Image (cartoon, rainbow, N blue to C red; front, side, top):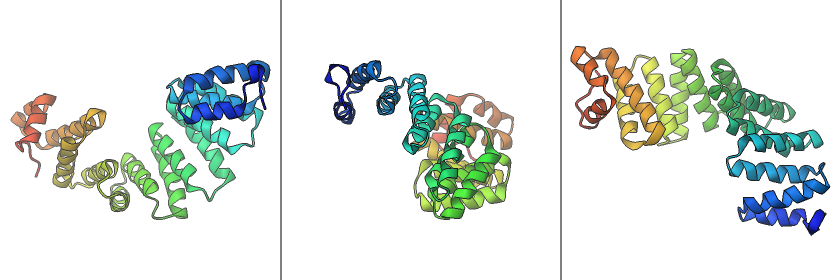
Length: 251
């Protein structure tokens, strides 16, 4: 099918496949000027806008595709992705929940819901979703990780530790699984082991992830340190040096 100027969806697909998102936007604009109800054009436009980081516009076009064809699962999944990218985690979780209700044997959407619930600070709901996924597949690593993170946030030390050990076994060396295990160990009172985990991660990670685990190590250290130790922990860069050189310890 072609739109004004002879633009065909096959041409749009070709441009999308080569990551020429500006071309996708130009061509879909032409198609939608002639056929505003072309759901596939809205889909391509939403996917390119997502790739370009224009999340609100992507959501608008994904929503249009859903309205035009409510039964197309691909469009609903795209809308959930756009909502998540925009930071509307509760709405994204609700979309993934709808998808999972339509196909309850599909754990990927249930795990995605659990992840979005965590980002939305809905820890109890995340735990419930993660458990649904685990009932389908006990060796689903992402589900075990989400369960560990959710249980840690609701204060279930024993459950968090069990799920975190499962996640770490299924995802050997994975930083997120190792951090979840450190969190669970801290919650369970295994402070020396947790501190050792945070210290190792702080050496390996950079950016926001590195800062996050460094902050956890500082908080844990401050709880046990005396006045001099708390003074050391009060200055992040000083504590980072002390941690790197092995001066900061927890027993």
